[in-house]
Length: 467
Ligand code: URP
Ligand code: ZN
Ligand code: ZN
Image (tube, rainbow, N blue to C red; front, side, top):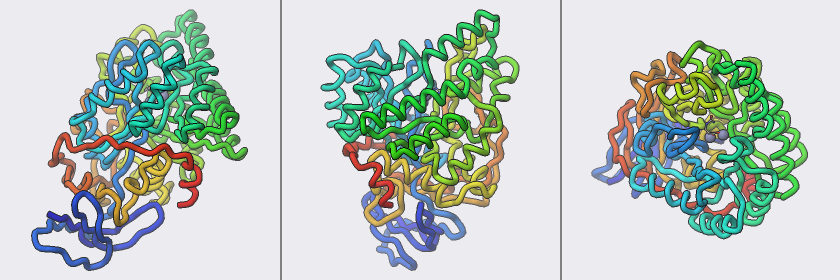
């Protein structure tokens, strides 16, 4: 049976037209005004609503053993949250630790997701050490369709790589046409500053930010960019949080380095005062890089508007109150991370588009299209076009609500954006033509999501700029 989405305002990264969308067998087969439909077609009236391509979150953690515990969500719960918030594809960080075997780790992550996700998904493969097995194992992973890597310059002795390991990873990635994403903070400086602060009795959550100041992130960003430049690879800075790091990235872009930048939801809306709140309230807002001084927020919004920041992800990484309390007496033990996959689209729409800070097309580009292009998913994902997967978000701009842990769908007992008002939400969400969400309620098929296997994309840069 076909599905017709009638008379919506279809908005992509480049265009806005009123019309109908016809879907057959998971794919968009026609777009235009007044489409006639075969008998038996389900018709959805989208009059007065926007119709977006399904949104893509390029940075989530679902299965994550980290900081003496595990992130809370399962693929089932995270994917339902994502879909209710309009995200139809997420890319999960597959993160075995330095002690683990890379290929075994890959199998653990893919098996956990298989059959359990309600939305489509892909992986970035973390390279957390470099030894004789690494290259052949990575070749196998790339042949399996996971064509993006992740490295951490932070988290020494756990996920972190040293400069030599970063060099080998980028060399291989450059050869294979694989894009490498990177968490850019100087691990040594973080470790030393943490020890100094603890020795002075500075143990509370408020000291997390001073232990990884802006300069530490700027150094990591500049160093990663230099390694990308010298190896001829393509790099993608994840969760960039502050002006000095942005300057380092823009410097590299100006030199012609193939470097792309992601910032994540918390850094557009929250500042360090949230992490300075007393007790566990502060701990709930501990992430790395940390929430920054408020002066950074308009700078990040400006960079997003002008495209210096390419994409917006979440770094969704939920730990509950009990887990956060692991660091009650020592801020270095607070599990780093905050959920966000359910709230990204509505909050960026409200505080970006509705407040006049973000053009509607740049919003679609930053939250969907550009990630699809960079990570080898375009035009299957990231646009509304004949031949693309029918991942669609019919968006109700008249909706008014408030973000609250009482109504969220992920497994957590708090929401870092509690009380933020939203002005819009998805009225209907489809994944490959199947209606998965109606008006904030999951009505679909829990295990429908498929792993997206991607080609290595030597020409990410050219593809992006070719439109
Ligand atoms: O604080 C964060 N960001 N937690 C998740 C792990 C990471 O660094 O992305
Ligand atoms: Zn990170
Ligand atoms: Zn992350």
